[in-house]
Structures are given as C-alpha cells and as structure tokens.
Amino acid sequence: MIRGAAEVLADDPHLSAAQRERVARIERATAAMAELIAALLLLAREDAASIKESCDARTIAVECVERYRPLATSRGTTLALDGTDAVALWAPPALFAIVVANLVHNAVAHTRDGHITVALDPHTLTVRDSGSGIQDEALARVFERHYRGPDSEGAGIGLFLVKRICDRLGWRISLQSDPLAGTTATLLF
Image (cartoon, rainbow, N blue to C red):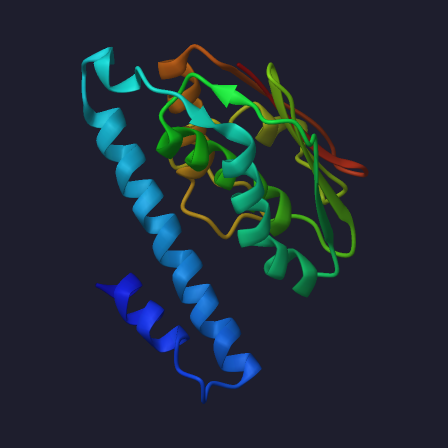
C-alpha cells in the first residue's frame, strides 16, 4: 500500500527534485521493510526447505549500495562496490539482502567524511569502512541480541539478525576493528 502510493506520487510531473528524492527515500524504505519481513518469515520457519534457492548476489549488492549511497554522500562518505562479475549464491534473496543491508548500513552509520568499500566474489562479501571503529569490549558483544554500542542509534537487532542468518545458512561472519582506522566485516559463504 505504501509502496504503491509512493510509485503513484513518483509519477507526478510537478514534483521538485527535492520532493522526488523524498519519494525515492520512501520507496527505498518500503523495499527494506519488505526484505526484512520476508527474511523474518524465512527465519521463523523451522524446516530447511525454505533455504533451497539461489540468488543473484551481485544484483542485490548493487541495489543495496545504491540504496545507501545518498545517506553516505550526505555524511561526506564515498560508497563503492568492487567486483564486476555475477555471483550466484545458494541462499534466499531476502536473507542475503538483509545481511548486506545491515552490514552496509552499519558502515554508513559509523563513517563520516570517509570511505566504504563493499567487495563481493563467489566466496566472500567484505564491507570495509574508515569509520569510528569498535572498541574491543564492544566487539566481543556485537552479535548479541539487543546489544548496542555506545555510539549506536539502532535497536541492537541488526548484527544479531546477520549472525542468525549466517548460522542458518552455514556462513561465517567476522568483524575486525580498529577505533582509529575503521571496521571490516567479512562474510564467508
């Protein structure tokens, strides 16, 4: 319903550039909500049959980077995607999209006037930022449900959800961080 209304509004030829950007943000937010709902429904199922599908990981990564590029730009940060080859991944598209979105969103949220690189190949997804980094004591707890670091404005569910998806799909997620140099999230498929 929200998505449909935003699509109708986006077709209005009388919108200014600023209004078009606001409508685009609404469309991106509704897409993110739809992905989250789909991922949560998949995780709620107890059977593994629901994970027997593949996705175009590169297309999902490109869409995610484009969704967060305006926010990164507003924070003086460049956001780039490395890896031009298609990557077929044995995972539900909604689950992979949630993982990528959470990792990229966290990088953008904690990086000002810096750079973020998302790299994808058939075996690995890496999100590297030059942001504020994570203290060692917080790094040990980031995958806990409802844990929020001192600089976090989130609900403490994003990285918990990422870890749960990784566990469900047999992936390994790790974070390396230096409070002076930023954070690197590495996902091994």
